[in-house]
Length: 302
Image (cartoon, rainbow, N blue to C red; front, side, top):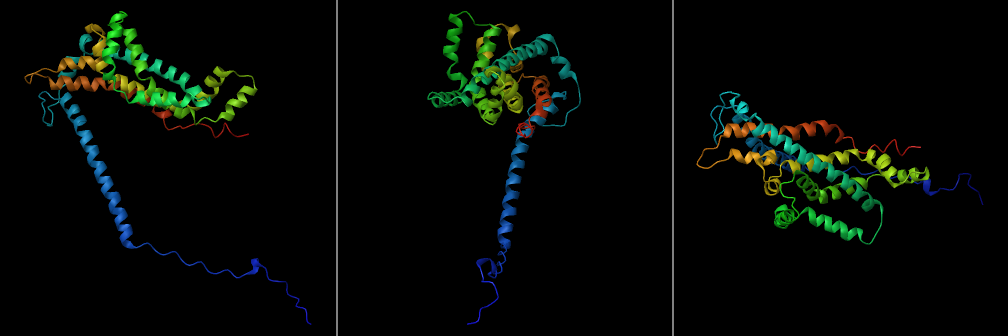
């Protein structure tokens, strides 16, 4: 019997069948997809225009000598800004607002960091119920608790106190700050903390030297959102502060409104433009840190 010199055929030597070409998508599918995207873009553009119209009215009315509800081309003047730029109307309320909101934001951010770290790193049976309680508190309207808070402030003689109002603003924003800060803190790798603990660092050193520098964009986000929420808060300082010289700008803007069509819309718009400057300045100063993300790529190498 003759022996063949050719090697035995294996599965590797099997001829490969040609791959059938992918079926082209029908033109109708592409047309429907582009039409859907165009419809969404048009809808978003319309919503953007609806949002920008009040801002445009405010800017035009602030430099107009005759302003009303109508959106008209202004006759440029600076009389509205000159009328509101004084100590009683603008300077003192803006300073009070900066003290209240700046102090409340500082209290909220510091307490949120200290509360979010054990919630993010420690495992406990009470952690989930506590987080659900915090989540429930974020949706609780501030008007629902102002009556008992006002009663408590009167009983302990803290009514009309700038410090007590600042602490209450920070405490009211604390649930949102804790929940958001914990979400950012969960993104910091635990392996970095373990390496620091091996080198002899305690918990506070790990928090301030390892965790916080890596989650700096998250701290910026919590700071900006907390300050914006406090800066536009009208109800809390209106209830807890009684002296006119202690009222922030969010409450003093109410003095521009009057009945029987006597409202000075030009001065109101000029004050609103000035009132929005601190928030814009805060965002511009901190915006560069919003897109930085967590600088973990180099920290994990080696």
